[in-house]
Image 1 (cartoon, rainbow, N blue to C red):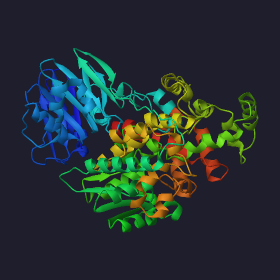
Image 2: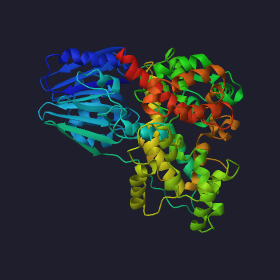
Image 3: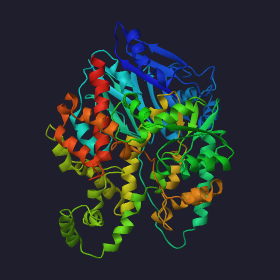
Image 4: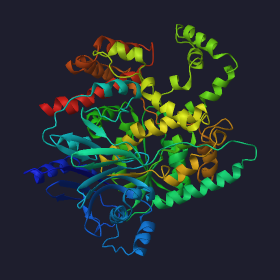
Length: 619
């Protein structure tokens, strides 16, 4: 795991500039650095040594000396690829996956991406053709950002490295803020920094002669098989168990010790138990069992004979960490679990360099409770939709009583009601709190093209639950889940590996019928069956809870209430929001008139991010 950066074009100070860019991402690779400078390209690299500790230094060149690469990630099938390349006559100087990657690209060009099994963000300079190629992995595990600044094409693993390039003028992207308030993350290709873009998952970028084009090389698309009574669940369970085992084996390849994150849930519990790791890491809060999975995780650790490290996060240190968390995130994120992950990564980094983590299992195997909603709505499916639509309008005028939300959602199509696992502010609420007029599309309009593509590509073969999965796989997973996993771990120079987001596992999961995911009153049905032997029964049967964070409680306590009030009445808040509306949300929450904790947190983290990147930096 490392950090990469670079730019095209000649500068007299290019060595100084690349060193400044590398310094900005030193936390991604504290072990060493390297650079490559030519008249038309400059590449920079920060290394966290995981494989081939002695000889894996970058930038690295291909066997013929034509290609030069900087690479962030891991290629888990590098040994198989190396054997294939050696059979074709290519010789190697190191035992690193980087050398295998650059020579695979030398041998196969763009088609090399189809051969890779791993997580990656890389840049390859072709000396003969004078071209630059960027690529990001299939699911968006590793980040790649880029911008055009004063005639230079600039790229990096993190935005802060691009900010270190001379000539970039910092401006907030208002359209990103508009979408963020609903999604709790920025789903756009353009980031919160105007003019800086993210390369999307499964995409490559080709740059030549001052122009670039972006290509899609992989689509995260579900192609479920038809369910019938002849479908053998035991056979599916057995197949999945073997595929999971193979992925975990490949993800354990390392020249340093690999540990595991451990919550009280199925996903991390399986990885910690099945991987053969010796150490596991858990965080919790001293706010009662509701906000701590420490005891549940301890039972898994005991069953697997793991050395179990636990960090209890206090309310004060949680608050104090927010500016650093937002700095390392690069963009605001309204997911409070990012802060918990920051502390979890810090704890793990004190003992190991690499950990396994359970991201992706819920999106692939149908683990979120919201995926059961279409089944619940079938109870009223016999009522004509036009009538349900009318009832919805009436229900929307009712006070917030039990059953109201069900009636509202029953009168909406999935394309209208589902934008992902988070839906913080609706369009009307955004218009009420934002000082500047909303100019971008609504969240539903933003996702409409994606939903339309699902319809045209699948011809009604996808059920509503699978459409919801597809949205989460393409937006929520890379925009929130993987974004925080990468940034919070790399803040502490820790590599996080996600074995469930393996190409072989995806190929299996994409074909699963809905009945293998939502069944027997539970989510992730076939997955639970496949991993059950590794877990205590109560862990395997536990309902999906998410990462419980007590911000709802803390925001009602006087100290946090006052600190948030100060932020909500600051001149920075007044620049973007109607502060009286923010205070109303805060006061209604404190008085227990409503649970506005997620709405408050989403604005709060934006303001802390803004202060860190636009106010503090200018002082």
